[in-house]
Length: 245
Image (cartoon, rainbow, N blue to C red; front, side, top):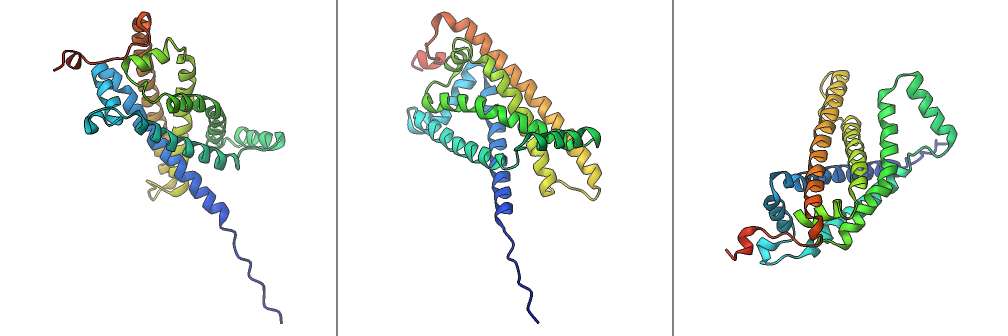
């Protein structure tokens, strides 16, 4: 009697799923921190200047090193490309697959499937929108500050791109965190249906808060950019440093 041949399971799909989740989580956490950084402009120009120079190591080394910022952005670029490549495995590859997913979401009322479709659409948009933003920051890491960033937003006419980028990032990231929590069982209680509803409410609450904060921040940069347009290119220096104090 022949002994049944044992088929060794292919672990690569699970490994790639784990990498996709890890890169997505890292990017989502970075975006939360990034929002906190750029929104410091709401506390005033001096606050944003201090945050920007701190990331450049000025208060540690005595002078700014924009290369530190460029290094962080380079790491984010690698994570972004890796996450996009891993996510492409699950994109609908044909019109028939796309129609089948839409039909399932519509006929069966699968809200999570609709959320996944929105994640696909916003992810596709981010291929283009985020790439432009990352390239600009990677090549000009020293031009981050109250006047410098405002000039890029307004005089550089980046504000339309940033509106679309903000919408895409917050929708994609919020849905991604929700799906990660559901996939890996984070914050899951004994009642899975109740946990799903609770996580979904938290997801929409988080998306709403970050969109409001993001648009308020963008409006602040636009206002400063309009006021500073006649002196475009001038770098911001707090008054205490101008007087040599």
